[in-house]
Length: 189
View 1 (tube, rainbow, N blue to C red):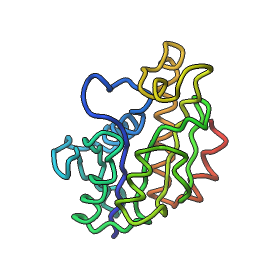
View 2 (view 1 turned 90 degrees about the vertical axis):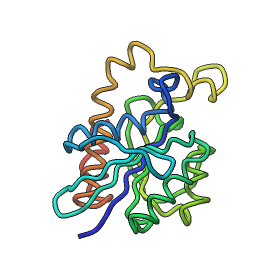
View 3 (view 1 turned 120 degrees about the horizontal axis):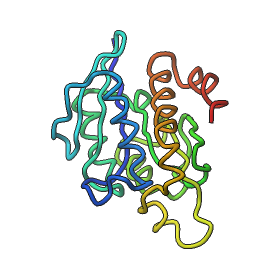
């Protein structure tokens, strides 16, 4: 029996709830719903809940530190639950993927994503799984404004399917490993 930690990245509070930057929170909420979690509690500068999936414990975590300091909360939860870096899955928004595309990968760089940068700095390096939920780059304007804006009406119509795909990928990664999840789900985007 092992423990996995799924960290969905986002910003706390109702002002940010529908932002593209908060898709990590949204996928974690979908997993909590799907797995019948009993509700989130405050600890580690985060909201967390713990569930059993097959024979493993899974901690679902939403850092409440704001995106740029996400690694502080993730590292505190990793230490408390004794989760090695290889058992961490980070769910985050990805400018370099079109909206509707969801990809899983193990390790890699941060591509300028401050939440990922914070995780690499605080959690022991880049060797954790990432569920990258595409939000696309804006046609014009600065990326910072794009990530902190809400999904438009066309995107909102598809968002449930995108969040389901992200949750399916994470669930398969927990149950069968990252490579199997990639092989099974990458053609669904």
